[in-house]
Image 1: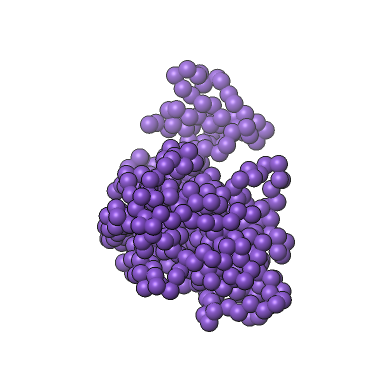
Image 2: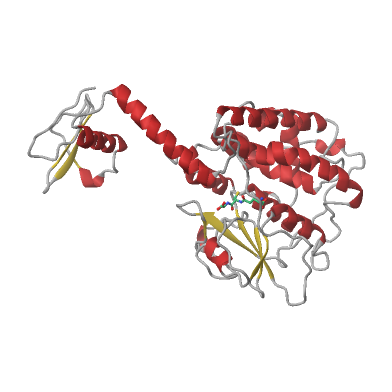
Length: 418
Ligand SMILES: N[C@@H](CCC(=O)N[C@@H](CS)C(=O)NCC(=O)O)C(=O)O
């Protein structure tokens, strides 16, 4: 690569052998030099998006007086990028001293359990990419709580925070949930909703899912597991499907055991891979993840769901990670040892749950992919969203799973559809 100064009277811009740029006060042009294009061919610079290569070259030329030799350029950029990356990651994903991701605890817990009063009006705030919020959408749908707990669906904003947008109804696919406006408070973003809290104020992370008390203007809870337990058993007087119990007394022990394995190694395990800030931290996370997936794959050979014939809250929690696995975690979070589609039992189990009435409507793959690839900037600086793996298409997820045969009593989930 060689550098060329076009003219001392012009603003000196470094050009390599394939790109030449000149700029004068009155007229700015970019010349793309390629074997098929002569130096005389010009394109107005204003019509072009900024070329980061040229930008970098300009900076180095201004600071250094000439272009940096490639080796020095790479090591300078690597050092700068690395420090910036560490800084961004420490904001995005707090870690311990060995670079292991440590998920911040939820601030508002349902402990002791929330008691409904006659005047209570609940509202649920969610975001479609979020696996934790997805849990609450599934339990709400299975229990038939759509009228009792209306929702507002936020989308990720440019800075990664949750925002509301009024999407015209004509653009909405009616069979699938899409982001929209704040139907309870009319706020433009979730931070403002948290800010409306009457008692004590709040300046912490504005996370989804968040259950809101409309009358009292209070955050009821922002911990997904508390919310799904509450939806399962706390609103039966109002639910359309009160008979469905996703946490029956006799299975509570087993559910707890599975959650104790699945949460650290799979649900949070994928984040521990993606947000690892050292090789050791990644190695131990990825090892824990795939060892646990093998254990579950093995278990599902003879068991239809995690705790036997009955779908439970543990399955809901596992499902929302599995449904994102091939589209997001396998690629963006470096969970690369295997794709989910390579596990026949786990993939059949995924399809079994996906095909339950009302579950597919909660899975918006474009929103999921956009949310992760465009927002987690430090992991994907170019924001390029890859093509969706064919295994994640609705048609594939709708193929038969044949897992009914594993049920000792041939149970089919009964979910009343509105
Ligand atoms: N432990 C929480 C985790 C919730 C959470 O981390 N939500 C993320 C989206 S996946 C969020 O809203 N992050 C926004 C932020 O941290 O500012 C739960 O299970 O509900």
